[in-house]
Image (cartoon, rainbow, N blue to C red; front, side, top):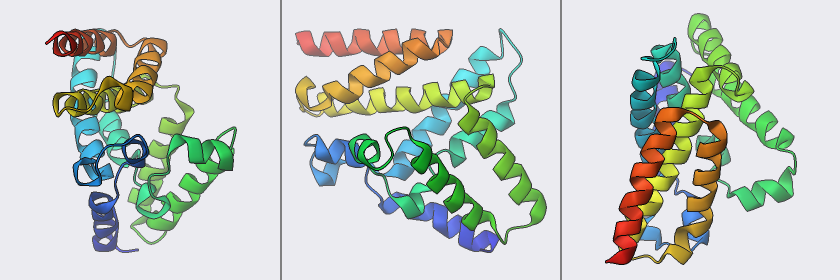
Length: 197
């Protein structure tokens, strides 16, 4: 795959809907694409990384690369809902293996320096150990929560988004990134005001 083909492959994410919202009852015309999800995840990761860097060392470039790459395999694998993956791969090994294989396929013919760099970034992201990976994971969950909030603003009931909203909350608190928790609490206060109107 040439660099131009890789960029086109990334562009396919614009046409792949986030199926978690579809199966929970959000109208197909209103469901965000994977590319829209990635876009706000990258923006959120930038904010989290910049704020976290005030307290500890953070490699901002690594963080942003992780955020851009985190859902790239979905250009081929599509956005399978968590429930589908749970049946296909109860311990996520198959999912991670499939994502790694697809990414390797995408990068097979790009210049070697980029291939090695992006594969290294991917491995670090999947290990969930470095702070940069934790930032991207928190950004990913915050993006889901912001999308849930936007659906509530658009008139969808909490029942439609509750499962994803609660998962995001649980993951953000277990991640423990202070700035992510603070942003979550701000968003939750906005949601509570919305619910009282």
